[in-house]
Image (cartoon, rainbow, N blue to C red; front, side, top):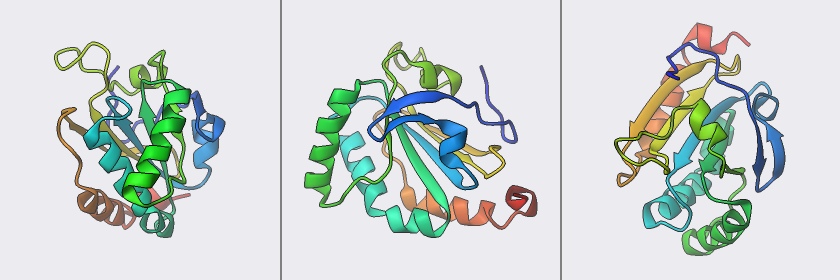
Length: 166
């Protein structure tokens, strides 16, 4: 399934480190950023989530809620979150989605068979308050994301009148 800019972001129900969430309900009237990670406990994923947590106030000041998805289980997520907090000297304050059955990964086309048949690529989805997809980025699993660029894009998108209609 291909998702395009302007499409309604697929809703889902998922087990997370903050309990079970319904995606659209979790976002409410906020913007959202959905980030996928290939696996727990990998160096790039660990530093990226640590950086995301360090930028928590920057996301909150922009009315953006963060969600992270990985195909690992919830027990691993709890241990991994503790490692991230310790290594990055921060506190994760957003849900980590356990997607062992790859339901979210499938809805958002995060598994690219030419890269891996089981692990997600590094996807970024920015979703506006109307649940419309406003940005998609896809990085290979080995490459980290540029969060300064992601914040810059959020700032630009929030200037667009139709993206702020809510």
